[in-house]
Length: 165
Image (cartoon, rainbow, N blue to C red; front, top):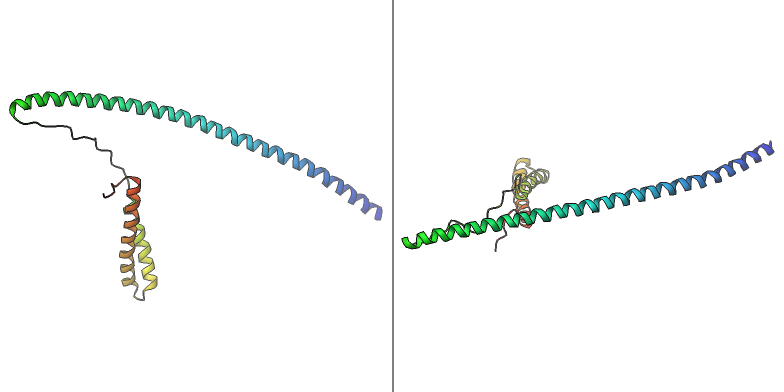
C-alpha cells in the first residue's frame, strides 16, 4: 500500500511540474500576442490620426481661401458703394466684421448646473429641516444658485459664453 501512495505522489509531482511549464509557455505566448495586437491597434490609430490631420488641414486651407475670396468681393462691393455714396455725401458699410458663429445646441452647462443643484439642494434641505417643505424650497433655491454659478463658469471656459472683461 505504501508503494502505491509513493508512486501516486511521485507521478502527481512529475505531472504538476510538467503542467506548469506548459502553462507558463502558453501564458507567455498569450501575453506576446496581446502586446502585438495592442501595438497593431496603436499603429493603426496613429496612421488614422495622421490621415485625419491631413484632411483637416486641407479643409482649413480651402476655408481660408473661400474667406479670402469673400473678403475680396466685399471690398470690391464696398468700394463701388463708397464711390456712389461719396457723390451723395455719406458712406455706408454693409459688412460689420466677423461672421456670427453657429449656436451650440442642447442645454448649456449653466442650465444643467441649475437643475442638478436645485434637485440636490431640495433633497438636502428636506433632510436637514424639520419642516420638509420649507427646507426643500430653501435648499432648492440655494442649490440652484450655486449650480448656476458653477455651470456658468464652465460655459465661459468652453467658449459658449464670452467672459466679461
